[in-house]
Image (cartoon, rainbow, N blue to C red; front, side, top):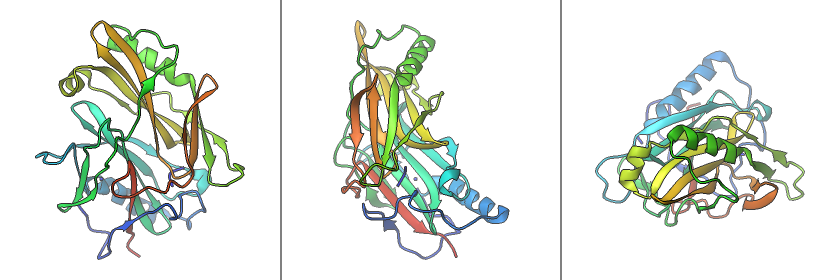
Length: 283
């Protein structure tokens, strides 16, 4: 499972805690119970926390990217309190960063993931850099046996949905024997559809794209990018996956494994493609 710009009131006087690979994952045990007043307070905090951090498309950028909430989710099976949220930051029509925001065992967690094809993102808290991946966030590969991208946006969306339906994603969990393995469900609608006109300004070879999610309940564990890329007469579909959990993952196209992610990744730090930042909740 799974296991963002300026600080707001409700969290007071604590230092930011960067989650390492040994920190508790969200699914390792249910938090304490909830009541309606506390749940509303938590939901309001999650809503306001979208603006805690400045996400910049590159070093030296004058304008931060605008956060866009794309999904409200909840994982009742794992005892999650309140709503959680997934947010996307897009640069010229293409998603570059996503984050899940959720409460876990007394902390508000913001779980960042890079969707960038390059190592250029910078995230700041009050002017201080807290996250700057030094590698690309995703690796694209050709979609096997894919059709030629359609000429119209509606036609390409139908193709992307059809391609996504060919993918089976599995959470292999945290246990060494894979006994917590679980098949994930594809959300039928993309989390985010590219603004093709804006995207081409940033990359003339990028024709179209969308971001899909594979979920447990409504909780996204892995996201998949589909992009139509190429010159006017030579366009093809490409895919890439990004983890949204500290648990193990795998993805298959037509039963052939094409991507895996290890359990408890050891490199979740300020220069890695994924980072979780925690702030203690007010007692």
